[in-house]
Length: 289
Ligand SMILES: [Cu+2]
Image 1: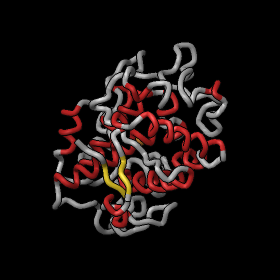
Image 2 (image 1 turned 45 degrees about the vertical axis):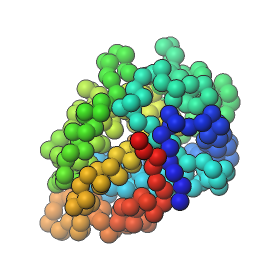
Image 3 (image 1 turned 90 degrees about the vertical axis):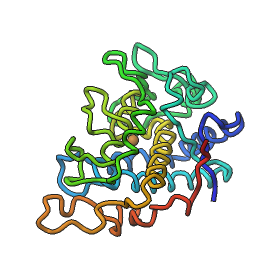
């Protein structure tokens, strides 16, 4: 059992140890398998087959398991390291200490979006982008998307989504008609041209590699998803009678049959059921307050 901290409360030494473990994993070649795995399971609605990491009820449990495996590998490098979370409703500016040169580094430069400061800048030599959707070998960001400006989500927007008592609804995808808690938080209820909503909007706000299937190329991915994971835990506390849906496999006549994982079916590639990761307190707690 260990604790995930709000990134703003980390000591200077904790910031450094997290960064150093991530960079060590990158150097050993272990990091990029997470980028590849996320890209492989990204899945768009239009494709046939299982939807797993996104646009599906497994958005929360799949990412919980994904973060757990990554975190355990970091702990194999430094047993004191845990994934911090970024509450983007509070630390919502490009000037936040999150983006300082001793932690995530800053925004991309205007000319090509290249991140020039911090431990993940290309010129450090320790953060080449080897798997991605573009040819760029350097990490990119484009905070706030200046050509079509967007702001990070507010606490009121987050609280509005947390108030939704139903976990997910048919057709269990990214359609705006899928109006449960999961799709509201994931953020497909607002189009990406408008910046998306909540989780998606944060990816869009950071910009660069954080947009799209290879988003774990940017280490802030883990801090963003740790907060999404905490949001799920908060929703469970707010709605103790609401469970994961669908609770049972969908009927054979359902158009989504075979495309959606229910409570007790295994999630590839982990072979772990959503029911097995429903309670995060089996693995870690969150520092809150
Ligand atoms: Cu995400």
